[in-house]
Image (cartoon, rainbow, N blue to C red; front, side, top):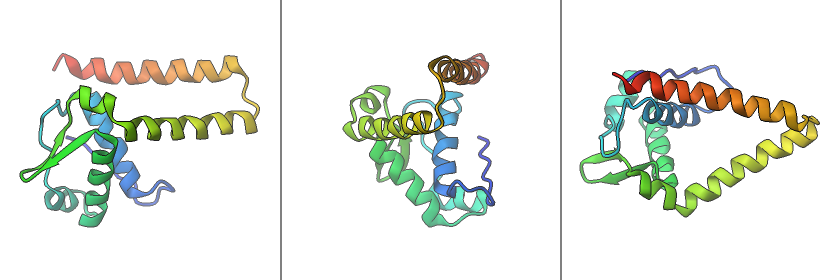
Amino acid sequence: MFIEILPNSDTPIYTQLMYQIKIGILKKEWSYGDGLPSVRSLASELGINMHTVNKAYNLLVEEGVLVKNQKGYFVSERAMMASNEHTKAAMQDKLKEILIDKQIFEVNEETFNGWLDEIEKELEGEGKAHADL
């Protein structure tokens, strides 16, 4: 597992951590049902506050990406992720923000769709590159 946190970034550390965990799932560093490091051990490893890790984990639980039980945090089954209403609402909020920016900065459809294609290929490559391991 490789998580890179940029402390001087404008993006909050808990948001960076959430993104890195999602990328780890995409890259198949964690599979559905796998346990994540404990809050204490991940905080120590990354040199960040335990409350920050706890916040990221709990927000991922709300989104349906993780589940929590007495033994810790685990990657949720894909079906649970897809049916989670909070996940749907969070994705719609993110899309709305992107579409607002698209309109404010007057990005045309061709450019916007090109960006989407580039990002999708990049993410597909990340997932496929680690599928053979």
